[in-house]
Image 1 (cartoon, one colour):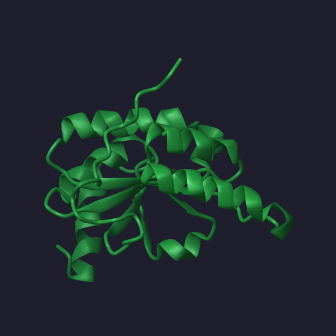
Image 2 (image 1 turned 60 degrees about the vertical axis):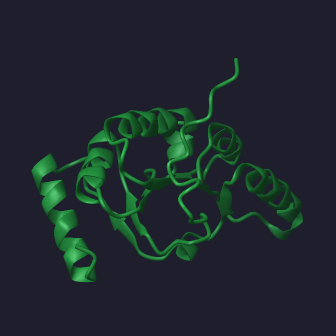
Length: 166
């Protein structure tokens, strides 16, 4: 069964996934994604999956979550990165689904050809493969697995104000 690619929110808006100047927000579920969309409504940003989401939840879980928030917040501009550390095969699924970026574990030098092939597949689909989390820069950790919506919104607004982005 072939899965339809998710809507690529970031494509066609004049920025490439290698441009990481937008705020990166790690979410843990739909509540965090909705909060990010509410607060960041006028600014492009990047939604980052939970750590090891490709292993724990699977790429399709994050794809379905993204589809839901894209329907609810159709005017909000964001890109997506799936954390596939712990499950390299999840990166292939992420590329097929249509994410803008994927994080994988660093591979030993002997397996560098695997990363090169994966990166080539990603490039063909507009998906950047990262094997160094620090390359992403600062990541805002949304505490959506423990905080109510109003507190999530408030904390993200305070964070953005501290960066001069509010």
